[in-house]
Amino acid sequence: MALHVRGVLLPDDEVRDLWLVGDRITFEPVPGAETIADGGFVLPGLVDAHCHIGIARGATPITSLDQARALARIDRDAGVLAIRDAGSPFPYPELEDEPDLPRMVRAGRHIAPPRRYLRDIGVEVEAAQVAATVAEQAAAGSGWVKLVGDWIDRGVGDLAPAWDADTMAAAVAAAHAAGVRAAVHTFSESAVEIMVRAGVDSVEHGTGLSLDLIDLMARQGTALIPTMINIQTFGHIADQARPKFPGYADHMIALRDRFPEVVRSAYEAGVPIFVGTDAGGGIDHGLAAEEMLLLHEQAGMSTEDVLAAATWRAREWLGFPGLVDGGLADLVVYSDDPRRDLRVVREPTRIVLRGRVIR
Ligand SMILES: [Zn+2]
Image (tube, rainbow, N blue to C red; front, side):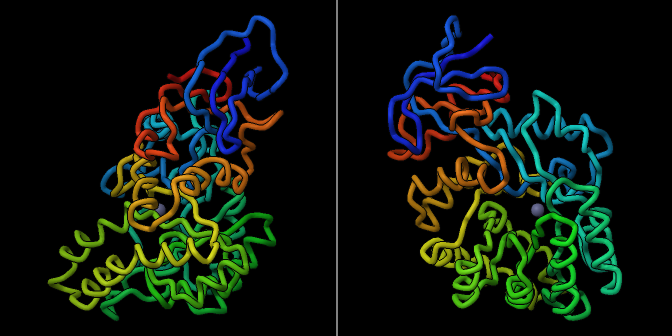
């Protein structure tokens, strides 16, 4: 059964009719199609470009596919129809093809330095093993690997890079040699400098970015996934750490406080920015709309650019074509124009995933 949708198509900003036949979009009329939306604003399904359906509340690994399904459905029901899983301790390649789950690209497990990162989440390796581990995790994931570029070093009492610059550069080269892209978690100034210069494909969080590095990212096309909603939790992290690690606590607060200006500078410099929530662990699933609002309100991104960062541009970046002839049959419909009032993205009136009506 084909489906028919009529509404203002974004970003084209034109009233269009489109038809969904199986998992494909067509602009050729299909006789007998069921009209499921007439009016409103039609966008490609949202993308959460940084989340974890393999990590449960409390930063513990999930232990079953059903847990991953349940978390992914929370995102789906908020209109997120594609995700980039930024590291999972539990493998779930079979979920990529499940018709009622968001589309996904996956990193394998996080690759982290020994005894520093969240317990049981990453593969923890010394510098000499990093490149080989990247190759293994490239094979375990689908299109991405995830490096933990920094974390607290309890010996130093502050954030510190995971490995030296040569190791980081070899890690990125190993990812590219394996035909995948490399994403890196960074909070600190030092790690993000090493990783951007190493040619990493995406910076996750990036609280330590300088203006020089932002310019370099813009020139290289290095993406930034700010996860602003996650950076807001730095106060809580700092409070917990302060008795033992006061310098780290102060550093985290300073990084948090300057972050809206960092994202604003990246936006103004033309760095490709995408919407990611970092759901899993400390952040609930289903909050892509809240991250979109933060990018608009705190970082000054225009509503149109936020919508692009959450939908058509993100889909293009991850290889999931949007509302074009022959594109994938994922869409969301909003009753009002999200460019005028972005808050409408909290309440999609229609959600269609792979040509099937979810709402
Ligand atoms: Zn994450």
